[in-house]
Length: 171
Image 1 (cartoon, rainbow, N blue to C red):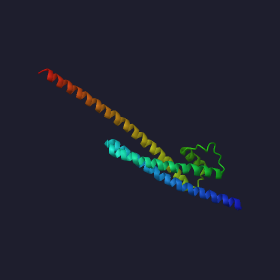
Image 2 (cartoon, helix red, strand yellow):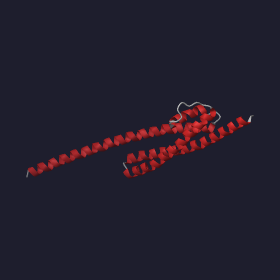
Image 3 (cartoon, one colour):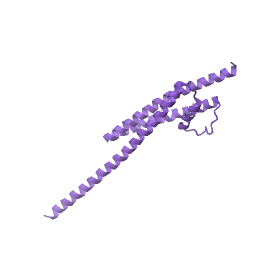
Image 4 (cartoon, rainbow, N blue to C red):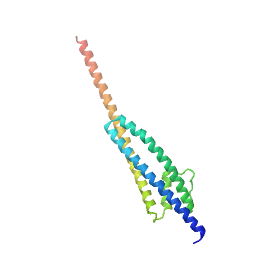
């Protein structure tokens, strides 16, 4: 084996190790995000504003951390693609989802851990979107429900006010 090939394999192996570290960290963060979304769901159902606000404060940290690791994932994916000779059309504005798709091209079937991590990331993304949509619908329904209660209270108040007015006038 030539020295150039050995160096290329060494660099490739290092890049894959970096990628595994970043993907492992990202999976952990995404699990935290999913847990946060599930906690949000419970807070919405319980109509507990304090817990909801605390969750949103924590969420800022989780999202910030995800963004940082996402940038690293994109950078390492581009690096891996270049080392493998994969031509990327637009690597300057690569998004996270595109980096995950590119990994499908870059990873060999024997990169078991990386393929597994990629699958986990895809699954977590789907679960996060699903839970986020459920929460958004629940908030909408709660908002609609709360508004209806408010309207009903207003109606009851108006009726009570009218009855009191009638009672006063009947004296």
